[in-house]
Length: 199
Image (cartoon, rainbow, N blue to C red):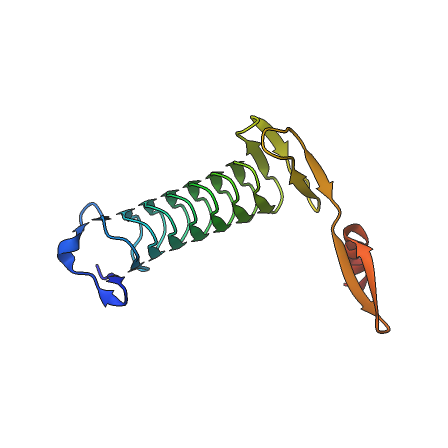
């Protein structure tokens, strides 16, 4: 199996990590690594913080903070805060706060506060406060600070109320269009109708 592990642009000495080829498990206490396992699926990673991963599908990650992940589908992440995820579908995330997620559909998120989500459909979110969600249909928000379940609506933007305050408010999205050189601000609903007419 071919893979690469670098630190500060140099190959990491193999004495600083353990690779069990049979169990497909990579372990190290080192930080700030770049790991390229892009051709290998079903790998388990245990690392320090601020690492970058490029892997195949069905992998498991147990890492520190400030890591970046680019993976296939079906991966499980248990990380610290401040991580960035660019993954396929069907992933499970158990992370700290201030993470950014760009994923496919069918993912489950259990995170801290201040996270940003851009996902496909059929996702479940269980987060702290101050998070941003950009989703498709059939998604649910579960607030663990209030134990509240919110069913998201298609083409509706909401803002959750502050920490330990139930509920949310609808956010009216505005769009600016230019007609004969004049900028005109219209509602999101009008924008969608106009878009449909012009299609």
